Image: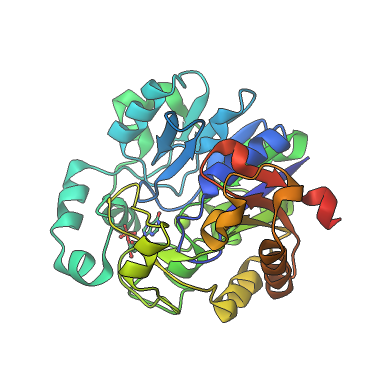
Length: 339
Ligand code: IMP
Ligand code: MG
């Protein structure tokens, strides 16, 4: 019936994985398919304080038992990380990898971590994704079909995505953020190695444009950025700590830089590029501590409603999901209220 694509408006780390898991459940999706660059993203969701699910390669849609997961052909695959996640979360029989995916090798990781420009200037996550994508462009990367251990998982994910989108419901989970897009961010070279928009995500998995039924753009109420590059309204480290909203990168462990306000011009630009049908407003607990852990619409505060209105005006799309804390249950479906 449709495919819904999940992207981030700014610099990522906004909970796209969690939103994709939420949507897999809401839409009872048959498949959740990972788009994006590679393993430079870290997606996590807390089922309880002690029980966290973290992935770098697989989409988090597998949290919904009816949903199968896959990796689109444009996404760089690190076989070791893939096998670790499949084993850790018991996903044998529920996961496929497109046979065309470029492969990240130990050599890619080493080269990326020793690359003075990527490390010193750009602030790469060092996952090897950029090096693997570069080798793919040079037509010298291996593909998933060349790796013996991946044979049981291979599939044609473009075919799965398009067939399933027509017959059922599919969620496409992108990585990074619109403002980290290689060719569309104003911040080159402080960007990642590909575009991270709705249309780029469709391309990553081979979904044709008529099968895109919707796009959820995730907006982080208190935007953050890891690595180098401009961050409007950047907070001092002391203020981040004082407000108790420090975050560390899932992949790199780096303290995330944070902004005291959403960069409204950039948000409007991201909305122009992605034209979302829905907005997920995440990290609202960092914006207004009074909503920490709220699970009911009634518990949202005037400050949050005001923010929702401003975000809706800037993006011309309704806020349908509000996140108030790190647990999975801290995501509120606000569709009925907005309607
Ligand atoms: P790379 O793509 O790992 O080489 O990193 C390039 C730039 O994008 C750096 O500034 C990274 O911090 C940033 N970046 C890459 N992946 C992510 C992500 O998943 N979340 C946030 N920032 C990212
Ligand atoms: Mg791509």
